[in-house]
Image (cartoon, rainbow, N blue to C red; front, top):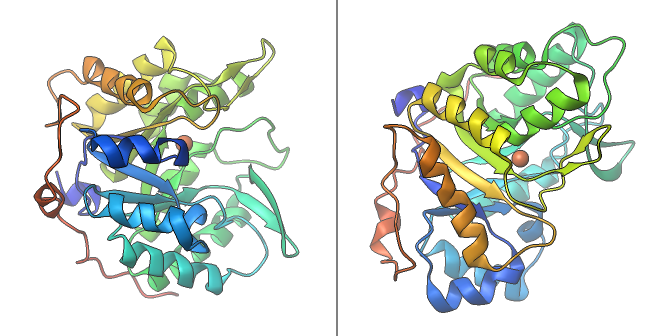
Length: 307
Ligand SMILES: [Fe+2]
């Protein structure tokens, strides 16, 4: 199973690391399995946030999740950005690096939004080449996340799941499957989320995201500001079953409650895992520094030649 996940381990149940929780984490060393950081929050910053991250990284596995790679943009890839990304990954021994199937800016401007791309042969060739270059530079498989979206393009000709599946096949990248994003997009674009799941290449899904969203009655917005709704949990049940066990992370980015609430929310995932329960810490107990060394680090990967 490990090889089917590109050599990346099932880390168990994690939560997104947010600064409001720093004091709690440092004081209590909660029994969460791992943390995901937003890469850009730490790439340029020294000082207290970075000092705190280093302390947390000594005790917990860290995964890096980016929002500025802009893999779909027509701007050249930013190698200064990639250099900092790679350095941070080395510094915190990141288990893997992910970003989104999207573009975030053009002509040197950053919109700070995860914008959808038209899905067709032309954009596929463009993204495929860029994924290969990024992986060659990072010397590890990149994970790409399915975005939530609010518009479709007249010249999209490839379903999202097929676009991602072909990317996996032709670049050996991995997928970060955001189950809430599938649900949000399925409502906004009126498709069956279970049909989407039918076509996901689960052997390449390394991580799942769960989150809450806002129901605006005519559409859903991926706000990460509340609990996961039951319909998303049901989708997660199917996704988890299809993977046979996978690293799962809860994102909570607005109206962030106390750490215990966020942690309790991700622990609900156990109810949907069937027989594939992870070995997780069940209580808010002290965490031994030696636990981290038990997590294999996927350094064996050699990126394919850039063509
Ligand atoms: Fe996500």
